[in-house]
Amino acid sequence: MKNSNWIFNTDFDEFIDLDSYVSRGGFSALRKVMSQDSSFIVEELNRAGLRGRGGAAFPTGIKIGMVASASEKERFIICNADEGEPGTFKDRFILTHLPFQLLEGILIAAYAAGAEKGFIYVRHEYPEAQEKIKNAITVAEKAGLFGKNILGGEFSLHLEIFSGAGSYLCGEETALLSSLEGKKGRPRLKPPYPTEAGYLGKPTLINNVETLANIPKIIEKGAEWYRSIGTEDSPGTKLISLSGDVKRRGLYEVPYGTSFHDIVYEYGGGPKDGRKVKAVNIGGASGVLVPSEMLDTLLEYRCCMEKEITIGSGALFVLDDTRDILENVRNRVRFFLHESCGKCTPCREGLRQVNILLEKLNKRTATEEDLDRLDRYTRVMQDASFCGLGQAAGNSLKSSLKYYRDEYMNGCVRYAEEMSA
Amino acid sequence: MSMVLVEKASSLTSEQSHSLLPVLLEYQKKNPCNYISEENVKEIAEKLNLSRSRVYSTASFYSEISLVPRGKHLIRICCNAPCENAGKEAIHRAVKDKLGIDVNETTEDGLFTLEIVNCLGACYMSPAMKIDDQVFGNLTPESAVEIIKKMEQTDEE
Ligand SMILES: Cc1cc2nc3c(=O)[nH]c(=O)nc-3n(C[C@H](O)[C@H](O)[C@H](O)COP(=O)(O)O)c2cc1C
Ligand code: SF4
Ligand code: FES
Image (cartoon, rainbow over all chains, first blue to last red; front, side):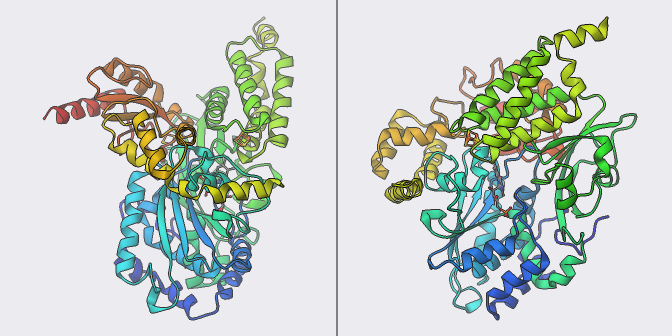
């Protein structure tokens, strides 16, 4: 299952330092691109079909191309290492174990976009990751691979490590920009998109850690090679953070096209002995909750879209048959309630009302009208929230209301009485 | 003015405020009580040429920044679903009993403050907690209390 010839080395016991990275082909992609026109990078990434791993799955080559073709010459690159989605630990792993692969990816993306300055926005909860990546930059600089006149050429890149301060919302790209500018981390209206007007109003490329760390391998080995992994619709691999009720929790590099069933049973070893899988939460708190019958779905964008599953950050959290679905829903609503910035009514008030209704369900004092109300608030949050946080909160609620209606019904007065009569 | 122009203008005039968040975190780290005091706010405002309300506004948005004094060590227990399912509640109770404090309270000797946080990126070893910069995973109520006892001992030395 594990294949050292894919993109990542997912061994928790191994730190890939500069020497071992170079001995495995590291920085050959950077040398390759710097002898060519930068448009080569965009074309290669487009041919490879690389999509963003931060949640929205936007084609990376197109995004880089948008910044590269901006008329404004001062441009920025931002690596989004805010990794706030509960249940996700893949970016943390890349930062602490594969920092040079990430740095090479940032260099290539910056070179293609024409950015000479930028940031890695790392969440505050990851101090050791901040240290590791800072050290890696120093080491790479000494080796002439970072900073001024990289590899003796014209290209320079100056990067700063910027620490977040405990706000999940700051992972959203426009909130991240506000945060970098010293303000409250509240999202801004799009358009303009960061590719047009980002940091300081300049064209800015914002990509996730995993997205950027894919780039060196694609350039080194070529788009054809990359497309030989995964499926036609979704080439390559995805890092899956597997947690919850499985025998082997951990980080796995999984080729697209693998079924969720195989991820849980083959990679994760299945549920603990004597237990059954009840539900799987795909994509963290903002993701969906699906019953075990749906596990034959493939980890693939098209396939997941058809079933309203969002792959998101690639967090997979397994609940076995001892678990209470509504307990999980309450936990996630509490999370959103805490992280909502309060800027728009559907999210702020919607979550507050939903929380009240969930408490009623918990005390078994809800009515079936309350369930209708829950459906309605969920829809409003999905459709009318200003940013992805409120929308995702709605999506995640919707999936549990759809697949676990009976557990919601159990929290209703009359229903509970009838069932026990 | 259109929304876009207003946003642009406000981002241009606030350029000196760009270092506000790192500066706040730096001050908090240096403050022995792990927080941003009124004195700190005044100093930061003068240094960066911002109004005090502007400094407060940013400081109060971020949950990592505290405007009330805290203990020397911050104990943070993760409360997201993977950790909740793995037994966070029992860890929480054991730590509360050990320290004799509730969430967001500080022990009388000023050594520990107990807080609840979001995912520490350690869900492969849930339940997890963090003390200052160090993450501890695969906790049991006993091991969590042991870890705190050890910290108390090293602090006495
Ligand atoms: C509430 C919210 C939180 C987000 N958090 C993150 C995050 O922690 N890391 C991340 O890379 N993207 C996050 N995103 C997505 C970013 O807005 C953005 O799409 C992404 O960084 C783009 O990079 P990519 O194209 O490489 O995926 C978040 C989005 C929303 C709505
Ligand atoms: S959806 Fe929620 S987090 Fe996003 S702007 Fe509205 S209130 Fe803020
Ligand atoms: S949910 Fe607790 S560490 Fe991730």
